[in-house]
Amino acid sequence: MSFKDKIAERARRRTLAAGDGLNPELNAEQDPELDEALRNFRSSVQAWSEAAYVRPRAAVERGQRRIWRLAVGWALGCVLVAGGASTGVWEHHQREMRSAAARVAEQERLAAQQRRNQQVRQEDEDLLAKVDSDVSREVPRAMEPLAQLMAEDETR
Image (cartoon, rainbow, N blue to C red; front, side):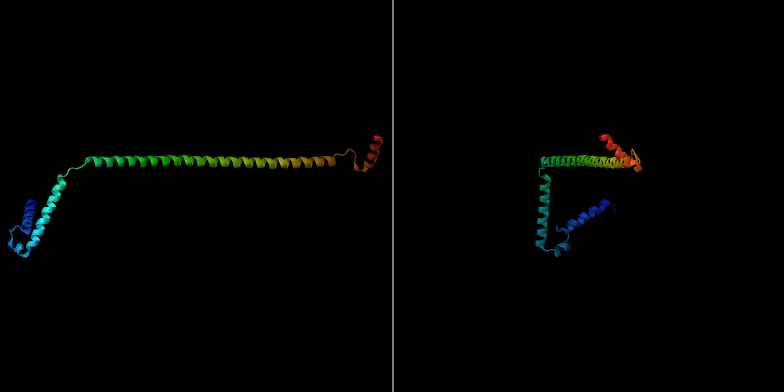
């Protein structure tokens, strides 16, 4: 049996099962009220589907929805691009701030080291000056009383 024959056989069985009066065995089992209800249901479904296929479709509504979707898509895309760009700018700014802070810290460290070196040099110079003044005397210690006497004579 071919595919077309199977479809034709199924359609014939449905017609017989629908209660068109061709199959008395099925009609005897069915209730006449049920037959009427099924026929009404079938006709209402057919009428509804016929009305759904025939009714005019509004292409404008679909176009408006499409325009809104397009506008929303562009808006979201712009928000994403702006967010990405602002994030890049913010990261660049943060990197610049960190490098500036590192430069300032390095300058402060160098200035502190320079102050320490200068302080050490000053202490060294003071110590050398003290040693120089202690070591370089005009007269030895043993001759100091005599030098003092001579200094008194000159002032008179």
